[in-house]
Every structure is written in C-alpha cells, then in structure tokens.
Image 1 (tube, rainbow, N blue to C red):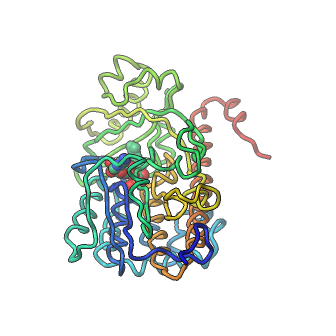
Image 2 (image 1 turned 30 degrees about the vertical axis):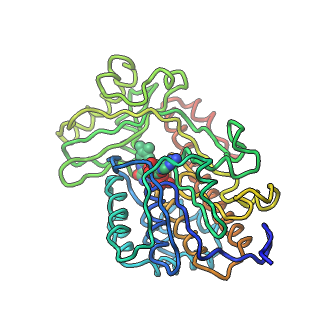
Image 3 (image 1 turned 90 degrees about the vertical axis):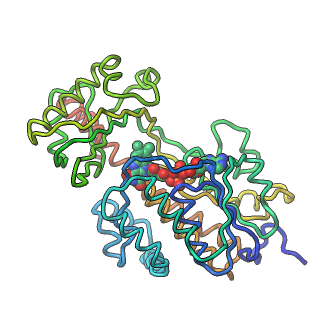
Length: 413
Ligand SMILES: Cc1cc2nc3c(=O)[nH]c(=O)nc-3n(C[C@H](O)[C@H](O)[C@H](O)COP(=O)(O)OP(=O)(O)OC[C@H]3O[C@@H](n4cnc5c(N)ncnc54)[C@H](O)[C@@H]3O)c2cc1C
C-alpha cells in the first residue's frame, strides 16, 4: 500500500525529479551540490537569459571554515552561533563541507577572500554545472508561475523555491495562504527606508567607526554610513557602498535608481551630506571619485518564512494537493532575508544543509521537513539578533551629536 500523505514512515523520495526554481546564487549552489550526489535528477528553471548583476558582494569566511573555532571567528556572529546551535550541529555542518567536491570548494574559497561581482559568482557555478561530466541537470529558461510550479510535481518529486526575496511559493506554503496579501506565511519587520549609495574612488580607502563619525560631522539630518565591511580596494579603485536613512515620504519621491546629478537637483540635503563625506575622504587620501554615484532606493526589511517547507499541507491540507504529498522547500532569500547580513552566505548554508538532508535516503520525510524547519529557525535567530543589533547601533550613531536623543535610544535595563 502506498504511504499516506503525512505518514511518519515515508522516506525521502528517490527516483523522481528535484525541481529547482530560480538559478540565482543559491539555486545554482544547490544544483551543483545535488548534481555531485548519487541518484539525483535536477531540473533547474531560470527566467533570465544572462547574468548581468555586477554589484560587488562579499561572502562570509565561515562558509569555508574547517573548524568550529574558525566558524565562530566573527566576534558578534560567533557568540550568536554559539548560543543558538548545539556543538554537534556545528560539527555536522562542517563535516558536510568536507564532502563538497573540490571544484565547488575551490570556488567558495576564492570568493571568501574578498569582494566579487555577483554575476561572476553566478557565471562560475553555472559554467561548473554545465562543464561537469554528467547529464543529471536539465536547464529550462522560463518564467515559472505558481500554478506551473505546483503542476510540475509528480509523485516522488521534490520542489525547491530559490526565487529570491519576492519568492514564488512562500505564501503558498500554508493552505489557503496564496490569495491573502500580505502573505500569512511571511513575517516581516521594516527596519528603515534607505538609499544605498555606491561609488568608486581612485585611491585606497578603508573605513572604520571613527571614520564613519568624523566624515559625518556636520551631517545632521542625513548621514552616509558605509555598510558593514563594505569598502574594498581591488588594486585599482576602492568600492564604497553605504546607506543613507530616509523617511517614507522621501522614499516615495525618489525613483528606484538615480545618480548624483539627480540627487543634487532633487534631494540637496542628502547630496550635501554625500559631498561632505566624499570631500573629507579626498582631503585625507588625495584621490578622486571615478564616475558618478549609483543610488538605489530600498525598503530595508528583515523577514522570514514562518514555514520554510510544505509541512502545513501535509498536516492539514487537502490530501489531493501536490504539496500534501511532495516535499517543498524554500532556500536562500525566498526563506530569510536581512539587509545588513551576508545573505548569499546564509543562502549557501541553507543549500548545504538541505543537500545534506536530501542525501540521507533513509530519513522519513516528516523528519526531513522538521529538521529543515528547525535549522532555518535557528538561522533566523542568528540573523535577527545581529540585524537588530546593527540597526540599534545605527540609530544611536545617527543621533550621536544630540546627547538627549542618544539617551532616549539607550535602554540599559
Ligand atoms: C545592493 C545590494 C548589495 C548586496 N550585497 C551583498 C553582499 O555583500 N553579500 C551578500 O551575501 N549578499 C549581498 N546582497 C544580497 C544578495 O544579493 C542576495 O542575498 C542573493 O542574491 C540571494 O540569492 P538567491 O539565489 O536566494 O536569490 P536571487 O539572487 O534573487 O535569485 C533568484 C533567481 O530566481 C530567478 N527567478 C525569480 N522568479 C522566477 C520565476 N518565477 N521563474 C524563474 N526564475 C525566477 C531570478 O531571475 C533569479 O535569478 C546584496 C543585495 C543588494 C540589493
């Protein structure tokens, strides 16, 4: 007799297809991991024809850690990790890393050295998948709709949504959830509205907390704050990315993307703060800006999927719905996102953990879903603690010239 949906003894499906929707960094990483494991047939769907995102991103060194100590090397994240994860869980994660094929591990090591364009990461993994001597990955270029994604599932198949922060399936993972806006499966905290401003500078420029303060002296309303580890000298120019906090009204008045000239004409207050900051950098290091400012308007939110798997469908949905029988997962930005954290690294960790679970063919599906949910919840705690701390420190920094405003923000007990 075939196992009933939700049966505790049903094992991880094998023999079916793993459908991965979204070939951004996380979908590609998951594909490359499953491709190198015995018995997986992967179909990877992506709507873009080319990888064009050139923004410089940094991966966290913990991705290539080879010991629990080096995994926890970051002072703040390290404490959170120690509080949230059992030592055994960390050791299991490191053991999985040791099993990652050398071609993929070499890429991870290279990226963890410094900054790298996002599309270089995407292209390298994409090429690695195509160049490997196996035909177990089929690629399809298509915009997949929710209905199509649900319709893909045959018995024994697995579906993984890697479609990023505007996830295709997140709010469909609870029965009846897809029609409700905002989705009942998304927990979101709006941290702030911001302009993310990037510029290139023709000299070496490194920023620290003192620099953030002294270069903003005089910027009372708008402070340009280089983001955590967001200045990088590539041997020719320094890449500088930072955030200016703006009001919701400002946000509504700015186009999604603009340049320095637009800013000077329309938001002179923000432009003056930027120019003051940059002038001080120039005085110190005798360099010049290369090109113009690149300005992107972003609502900065911290969010997570309350359910990162289809387990609610298995527990209480109509038994004839494909999500009640076939496991569905969210990975990467479709599951968790924070504006201040290294989200690609978190997404890669999800991919590694999920690949490690799927490889355990004797694992009941119920355990598979529960273990992934627990892992994602712990990752969420880690991201939440760090993001809230960064936001709090930013709030204090932004009113550092006003003693009473600072005191207002301090809740000591
Ligand atoms: C300005 C900026 C700077 C950043 N800097 C860093 C950094 O330094 N370090 C870091 O770790 N992270 C950084 N991030 C975040 C990082 O870019 C994301 O976390 C990462 O791209 C998420 O990867 P993902 O694969 O989960 O999703 P995405 O990169 O969003 O990929 C999703 C993929 O799914 C495809 N897709 C979506 N919908 C469909 C559909 N319906 N059908 C088919 N395909 C679909 C998309 O085309 C895309 O290729 C930054 C983000 C921004 C905006």
